[in-house]
Amino acid sequence: MNTSLLLKISIKSLREHKGRSILTMLGIIIGIAAIIATMAIGKGAQAKMTDKIMAMGSNYIFINSGNWLEMGKTNSKKKKKIAHLRFKDIEILQHHCPEVNEISPMLFLKEMVKFSHNNVVAEIKCGNEYFLKVLNRKVINGSNFTSYQCDHNSRVVVLGNKTAKELFKTLN
Image (cartoon, rainbow, N blue to C red):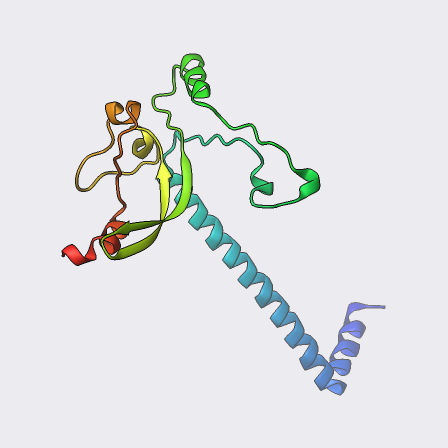
């Protein structure tokens, strides 16, 4: 069959079955639009994650013990004791990796923080005097932890701006 004959038959079929042709075109248009929207959402999410990673700094490594994929899951058959990192591991890293400038142990919690009559559920992030530098954060008011405070387990805190405002709103 030649191309001109196929083209004539196709046009004749489209004219005779207008409803079917419109529904087919509509399905194709919606399908392509869905694919384009999904790709745009994916690219946007990728850009947002890239921005967050780049905001941490270019020389940032996070080491965690255990399996992140199973964190929070409970299964009595598969209960495994997680080997936690110790302070001795930090000393070993510092000794064997002299290129590493700052190391900070980290602990993340979510707890109720109280002051006077104000209660705030806050994310608590624990570390040593290098903690804020490792996370690329700056202290706006006040000062950071000192090595003396960390070595002597002093009861000090650096509050985030949002938590400080919520906790001390009665002082303003």
